[in-house]
Image 1: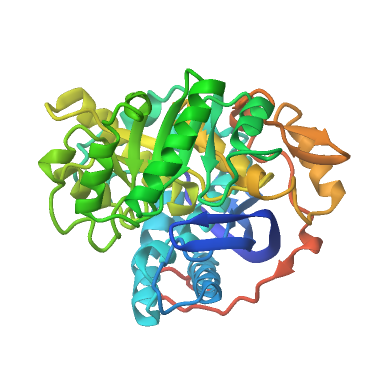
Image 2: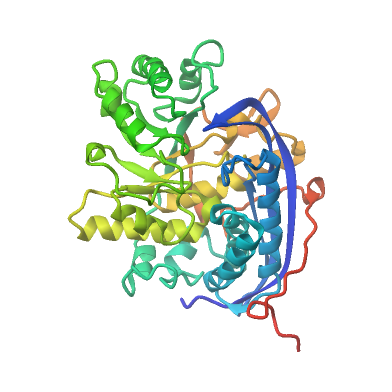
Length: 471
């Protein structure tokens, strides 16, 4: 079907502080609480009427922007201000398909970010949330589930932001999608997570039937190798068929990465190296594109994450020897889809080493965030993804119990009641996806209790190219 045009009749944004049950260290940052952002829109769809759409995502401090001069609170405030700016750009926009609206808002959002000293990755957070909510409303108005909407390309996704893709390649890719029936949990082992004791790694493996792991490394090669040796021994004993990834969160440089790779070849770590799938974002995003990867790293698949701040980032990285890119709904679902189309095309037609798109997490919380991100992961056909929101936050956190139970009733295979509280059911080591992909809308069968959230005031943004012309 042709992608319908739509009008964004209203936009509202909210937040809720989510305390962590244990500190989460990634790179140089330690997070003990972070706000979750929520968006609610009303869209009027050509030929289908009006519908509501919603989305949610964590505003994680010091991930989108690791500038040393900015405090964690500063980086969260930048995300909040960027979300407000994006809400102003999308509000009342009309006469475009869902993707055309996103593409049209992008230059103004980036111009705002440049004026405000906000890096592109952080600037993309607000539009990513708006795009998810608008698509949810569009699919709801059309009575389509996420998978059905993608296959029909009702959002009008095209290659205007990815001119390296051939004509018709996007439509063909979407039409050929085959969803994964379940997404296995890839368990995050943070730099402060205990390896022993009642909350240690062996206990986590037994409780969640884990076989995939994402291990944070901090840039100190001897310390990282010592910790990896401990982890490798635990995995060999308690999850012998495991597969693992490493995430450096921009804390390495080329010389130290070569040292780490060489150390992985020692007898003690060679079995772990054989089960290592890839290393994620080793270098500072500003240095990622400075030079090709060294020949000594040719046998090590390396992917970009924080450096993936533009639609062309993966193309640039692939030319330098990088083998993959992460999918995160917080970086934009349309970018994930286009990058997946690139991977499929490159692997089918190119002589270079196989490329990959991986599923990574931004501490996606129970409810809308994990449901929509997991639906995207499943639609891409990915069979495992990092899932750590349940690990660092207790169930639905401070959300009302009625909200948590509404989500559990809507997706009974996703959630379970533990000690009287609703939480993601990790006991099988996987998340079933059928209910996420089939319900009308973008994986949404329940909503937060909006009155329990803190409204974020909106500041109007005037852009004559995006605003509806008054009658």
